[in-house]
Length: 254
Image (cartoon, rainbow, N blue to C red; front, side, top):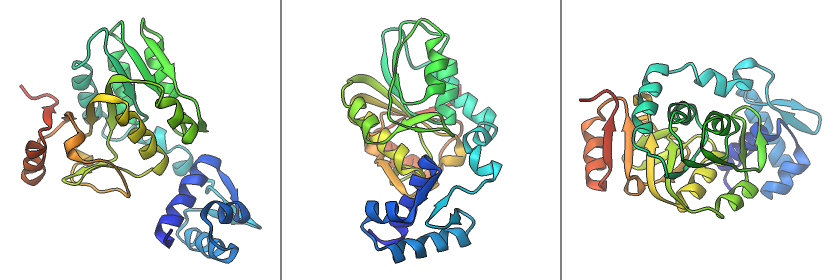
């Protein structure tokens, strides 16, 4: 594991656990205690972690603690348009995985007006939004991540593997000609597990995600069946989508 990958993993573990020790990180990564200390010092210098004797913690600032809540107020109109357009693609009797994200939460709220759906999700908020109507909801368990109120980790992935669904609805952290990506390793792992157990893949992305790159690969364009966006992609991405056979839905388009 190189330094970049190791530091990204450290940030992922901190996001989940809030506090970790040097010894625990060394055991997980196979790196020396001194290497981990250097990693933490580097991350601390960037303001990404707060060091304490023998370990590190998530910085105590509201922007970090409320990342999901903050994102709910970003691109709201675009995300809502995408969510409502995507919701219209589903009908009673459908079974679908829904992963965690601000756009998929809005999608779940738009979908809540329907009945007779079977939904499998790792997000508490999404389960609550859909469980209040006459739908069957399975809430995946696992290691609880409080910011997004989601379950992640190998335990969650093992549970996902017990289902077979007709659809999966994924929110994209980033999307370019190389495919769909995520900024979170844990969320990318969950998304891939859901995709593996579904027949049809629907991706939701507002225009701010298009042409953007993130560290963790989720899937290539060829694995996407339907992409719902709020604006026309640029020529390069549109050509790549067409070549991959992706059905494109533009929210608000006639």
